[in-house]
Length: 513
Image (cartoon, rainbow, N blue to C red; front, side, top):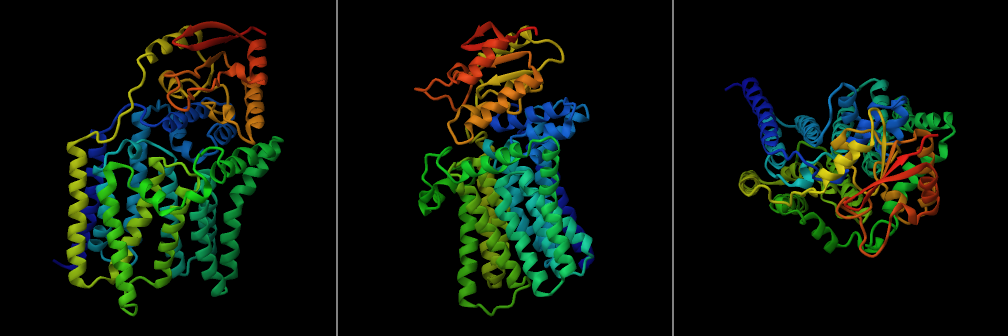
């Protein structure tokens, strides 16, 4: 077989693997709410699609993650009703795009056969490691794709004489990362600084200015947009300060910041999902073995430059930092680690002897595949959330008290009812967690709610802050009903009338004004 035919064959095998991945994930799809976050993003997409000012709504009704909501909002605007199954399907497509760019990253140095080999662990993970926390659509899906494309572009631009506008576009791409999720900023900075250092060292000033200019442009444009509506403070509170208090304080996590990076915390977090423990053990073995081999034979020639390997190490470490910083061990945070670890494991393998390479990779792929097979046979390995039976009664009450083209506000954490009934939210947050949780931004959040209620005049206000209507964040010993917050209680009392109570959920209809 000629080299060209072999390349074509391996490329075809990679594409076929992606199609098999899509088929498997479609077959094992779970058409229900696996994570409350998915309902939040769908609700935001519905609100954006029905808004008079879609861009403003996308920026403000997306819980500071407009690019997370954007793929769902585009589907809604195209007339497709997004539900949990479709959202998760969009997540799979985003992962397929991510895996394609991982393959292309390796193709910079290796044949299609070796590039496919290094990508197989991620293919197996996405196809067979069917853990609910990884399957459901969340903000990480868009972020991981953006970071992977960013890594690929940095490598491309570093090694070739591309025009300045390419550097501007890369800067623009990385500058958009905060609008997917602020958690990605450290990774984006590492990628940008790597290229900045290279351009500075080689005195490519025009390309350097283009990269920096593109990087700061998104923030400048969004700030200008908010300034136009006299809402600049809103941007900084909802985006920057919200992330700051979430990640760098104990407002939203009981874990002290000093304990968030301990080896015990890292181990518990990474190996928490039962579906991927073997996967992570394999990654650790491959990386550590590569490090040992590098220390033993530092002069061994490899295809990838040390600067690029150093970049992969930095991205992996900063990704680990980013998922630990907030002190909340949510499974979906771990998604940030899969691509960096797989890329680093591939690069570390370059320091193996041929015999060691063959043996370790055979064992590694076999172990990950067997774990994946176990996950499929025992599916679902993780807990599938069972939505309360009372949902049927709540839905009937919503339909009874709301008319066509009217909006609803939910006090509590029950975003799923917006998805059930396909209703736009009457305020910028489909849940009220940020409002009833005590924090330095609580007064600001409460004022925002009142302003939204006053401007949008939602026909129905549902106080769902009671278990099991609200499925999470319902404290046993604290009453977080809306009347416990004077400014909100006053507004609801003046503008709404109690019309129904179902399973503890209270329904208030807006008074005619």
